[in-house]
Image (cartoon, rainbow over the protein chains, first blue to last red):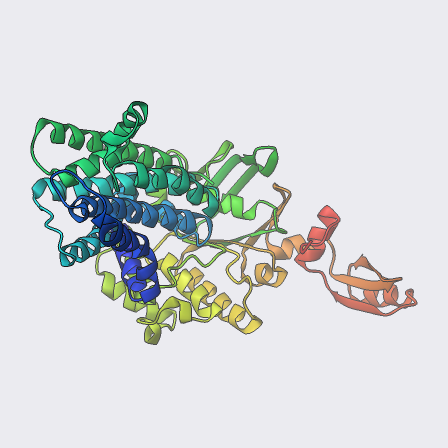
Length: 245
Length: 277
């Protein structure tokens, strides 16, 4: 499967954009703002049983940043590349399979999500967080990036304009960022809302990043993320395979 | 080399291409001529696997374009109308990524060879966004040549370029023909079609309305045109030879232009419209 050139192209473009300071700042501005405002400001007044608010918030922000960065990079890249710059058409006319395109885009999204997570993690640790890192944490983080990068493939391929991508972000990504346990525990929400929230993937990522262990509940969350991820990957492959102008 | 049978493409109620029968021979430069919206780009999109036809079939060297897209893709090089290079990357990087998509061996050597051929060697490590329009267009053609395609599709290759750069690209295209590559190009520039193409298919509103060599198409109308301007409206008189043109001009009581018949006259004769509508 010839995914490497697709991945490499995205990484080169990412590298070029990293050199622009404004780009990095704008991409990471929101989570950094949350970390400083909520973690240091509001955090002193919020009590989470058994932990400090900063330790509670940091995994949530890492989950949120990995989600938004992996998703946005892929969704915007495909929308703009397909509709505006028409660079996506180069892949369609080259002898590469739809699977290779999805894998290349997805891995680039993962790289981007992990990069954003690392910055938040380092900043959180510098601010005094005592976050525990283990294999489950890393695995959940990678799965989260992959799942939302695959969702980005679907949205990027189905959007008919840049506004479509933004609409999808506003109606799905933003609510998830706020309600899936990023800033406050889910179990304090009304019963019915909890049921809905527990069906959303970011809730499971937040759970896994906060309590990274190999318990049955953690494995269940891991399974949910994997199922969502596989569903998005398969759907993305089908959409690209059927692509026709 | 390329055969299309009843090839059609509808976008809801809009008929972009309507029952195209075509046979393109190996080694020729085949031109699709027509105004905007005639179906030229749609034809190219179908033949390069970017669009699926609503009806009909297309074959490239016995491979069905819809059912066997992968072998078709290995045979073709595509230079689209819009410059879809990665402008944030260098010329070398653009060619390298494209070459890797085709799993080409000796990639570095091939890139060097092509940059030399396209006179862009000294620009290999420059970002494409800093290239002039003509250089970007040249790089786009070089990229399409990376995989040593047997068929090269050029969709409006010189659109938006100044006359001098256009002539440079024409000479590049003629060089490619000498190497035996079959070239399918779309254009709405009369001069381009006449200068480059061995045969021309004229498309209008999705239908093929004429197909022949430029010389044969022009010969159908006679040798010369007398253009006369009457009350702001241009009138055309087709005549056989110069002598007939002079006598026709003498009957007009306004300024006239006598010139040779060209493909635009063929188009006007067939459709009643100008090419650049």
